[in-house]
Image (tube, rainbow, N blue to C red; front, side):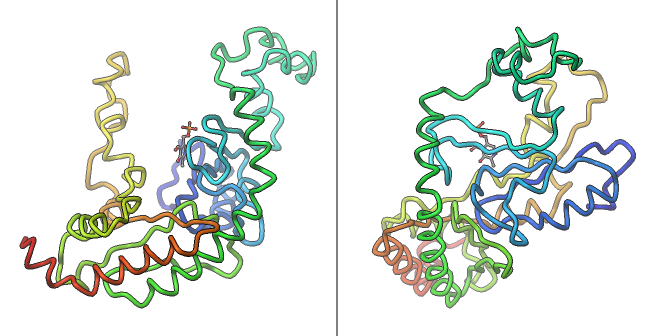
Amino acid sequence: MEAAITPRTKAIVVTHLWRVPAQTEALAGIADRHGITLVEDGSHAHGATAGHRHIGSFGTAAAFSMNGPKPLSAGEGGFVLTDDDEIYYRVLGQYNKRCRNEIPFDHPLARFSVTGMGLKLRIHPLAAALALNQLDHLDVRLTGRRRIAARMIDALRELPGISVPDIPPSCEPTWYALALVYQPDQLDGIPLTTLLKALHAEGCLDVDLPGSTRPLNEHPLFDAPNELFPLLPEGWPSYRPGQFPHAEHLHRHTLKLPVPHDNDDLADAYLQAFAKVISNYRDLKEAHPA
Ligand SMILES: Cc1ncc(COP(=O)(O)O)c(C=O)c1O
């Protein structure tokens, strides 16, 4: 990462995806050394810790989605954590009354209080109330998930063809999902999609190949943005597949499964299905030759 930093680099954005939080202390050190900002996306990691510190407390600001089945869910909505006044005032731009009450009258942003940032992107109040209630249950759920995840990892570690995450001792993940990395060479090269189909046939319908690990350079929004935004200036940076081989490889070899917080039977059913499918991989190869 340090080799990629140039004088034009403004920020490092880190997303704590699915399982073990990113090496946030190291990233914060790099950001400090280069005088750039660290921004965290903790949307999969509410309540996770790295280096015994909560995710979201390392960066200048951290965003947390609370949509759908996130570890802390409001149905829809999210929040920003920051201890930086300038960012705080800008985030407040979604709430004009709070702008008037909280931005000091002599601050340059105070005159924007009535319109804020122009758009109203704030959370629905009912969703915020739901989230506050869910917050009371977060620790119990995380404790349950951590217990079940540890059991699942121990069982899955014994199976060939998939590698389980290593968890540094100072890390407490949320287990938004248990992401596994497929090792095709250990299963005679059967395609990951064949394995997935067999797991689905065993009823593991929530096992999937996550779309959100797809590196940004492979998304047309980034590699062909002019189709959507024709007014973008000429020479706008564009990206292409192949530029980030490690991230691309990881994306094509990742599968994920849910981690229940209080349902050991469900976890066992997933584990049995994995054991059955993987121990019969030779039959799968015959049924679906490459
Ligand atoms: C890691 C991550 N960041 C950001 C988002 C966007 O969140 P929202 O839909 O609440 O804007 C999501 C949504 O699923 C996510 O998983």
